[in-house]
Amino acid sequence: MRLGVLDVGSNTVHLLVVDAHPGASPVPTASHKRVLRLAERLDAEGAVRAEGVDDLLDAVGSARQVATSEGVEELTGFATSALREAPNGPEALERVRRETGVALQVLSGGAEARLTFFAVRRWFGWSAGRMLVLDIGGGSLELAVGRDEDADVALSVPLGAGRTTRSHLAEGVTRPRDVAGLREHARDVLAASTGRLRGDDPPDLAVGSSKTFRTLGRLTGAAPAREGAHVPRELRRDALQELVPRLASLGPGGRRRLEGVSQARAGQVVAGAVVALEAMRALDLERLALSPWALREGVILRRLDALAPLVGR
Image 1 (cartoon, rainbow, N blue to C red):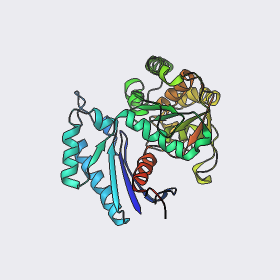
Image 2 (tube, rainbow, N blue to C red):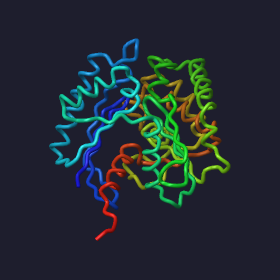
Image 3 (cartoon, helix red, strand yellow):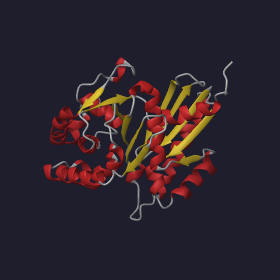
Image 4 (cartoon, rainbow, N blue to C red):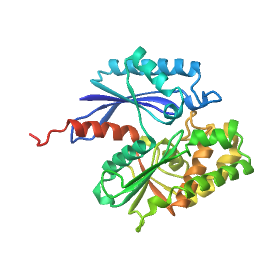
């Protein structure tokens, strides 16, 4: 079965097409991405401006055309923090449904964390034991912990790389005092939420998922994407500690020239690195394994489970 999942996030509209059937690993066949930066196109009340809604319609319509051309049999779409928090989010989503035929489901922060945890569990398996998962998006940081496929605790906090760039490092300015201010802010937010994740025992495996963590891993020595998804990769806290001031000192132009940093994320990589470092500190983590699967794969895997027969042939 060919499935498509359309992820409307704070930064991008991303269509992932996979060939899959219940019980098998989904095989990606196509990927279509457009940088939209919805979270930067808000008015003073936090509503998405008219031109942002128009561009959203265009991006979703284009993704639907790609899905049709790729032979997608079922297209599932979801939206995360930018539209979840916008006062005119429901109206924008209704217009998307009416004009493109794509019904986007708004995921809560907790649902994002749980679906990401589920995907990461499937990637690493039961042998990973009690697992702690961190995922940095554009608008929020998701955290989840548990021993099973469903997390025992799942949280979402407003520490996305795009959000914290806008609030503390606007226009790429990364003076030491601004970076220090972001660190203090991240510590305050995390102090109020991470206690629920600790439990009585440390996790057997701590994992970072999402493009931000994979980018930071690459910048600190992890294997490049061209070596394949199954190469073990990790992000070490000591290496990240050294990376943050180096990234901040480069300036926007220098960061864009780094191998492994996409043009779309160069402006947010400093904030992402600071949030990642402070989250690892708050949770007393020295290293994170890096997962190639995250939210989109979680959505696909949940759908495949719903299609699976009770007893196989």
